[in-house]
Length: 420
Image 1 (cartoon, rainbow, N blue to C red):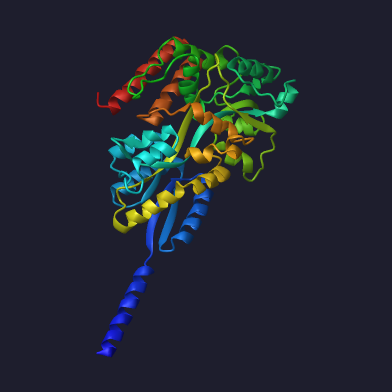
Image 2 (cartoon, rainbow, N blue to C red):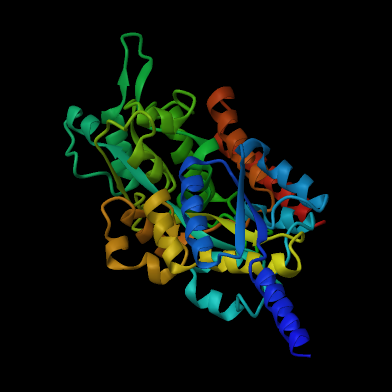
């Protein structure tokens, strides 16, 4: 009898030990971006040290392939348990059945509403959150201090208004003997962040509003929107201080010292601070976006992490643990330091050491007055701005006519998404 009891206890002990050591594997997918890969790898190492029974497999794909890979894999019951996506893709991911709502027990709605910047509420549908960001982004103005000195401008005083921006850009533009621009005073890149600068920043600074509150109606086809577009397109057509996509990519022109002023997102800080194989040999600064008529405005965007419909049972529980970890205050500070993207939690972002920082402080301060566009098709709605500028710059169409076409195309995209 005693032997049987000992055998039973031994069996139970071994069984319990085996279960305790059982490893739950979950898959995390994001698109390939060097600084993001490095940051997630560090967070995974930290997470696995705290949760030795969970293993996180990290997979990345080239940006151009990413959305297709995710849709195909999840539809087949494969792929990631946690997936990273751009906030503007949410409607597409929900329509494709890719995401499941976050557990109210683990991710209380009221807590998220209170602790995160308001733009994160775009991830809430019918009272339920479907994804959360580790970081958010805003826009700011980069300037080249060396080129400022060469132009006789104070290298420590970037433009603070649109009038100053235009004046500086004129002084900073260089041409060869034939009159061709060899150095742009200001970059012009609608395929980059300019479509957001025009839509959410310039339109508001000229007294307008790009969309209705629910994002369902285009409103920028008014005088304010036209004035904003005339300023933007006029950098090329009227003032000749820039070329669309100079050197193919505006970021590359700035890095090469061939562009004096450049508007871009906070995600560039990680790249600029490291410089890759060739360190960035520039004296550069970054400041809040120039205001107009006393109005400050900014655009905020973000990538979020959601739990896919593939995750169930123990994998779902493990995925929830990992999602909570990578959206913690500790993770957000690491992401800021490693990638340059801004903490999504207000308490982390607004620490004095962060909001007053010499580089990313300008982006963080911009979050106080930033707005996020509710995209129904981010790629399609961006293309309407690209085409709108091309019609004016390349074909000579009037700004008013081109704006009206863009507004109709944009509205059609929205109506299709809303099944109108």
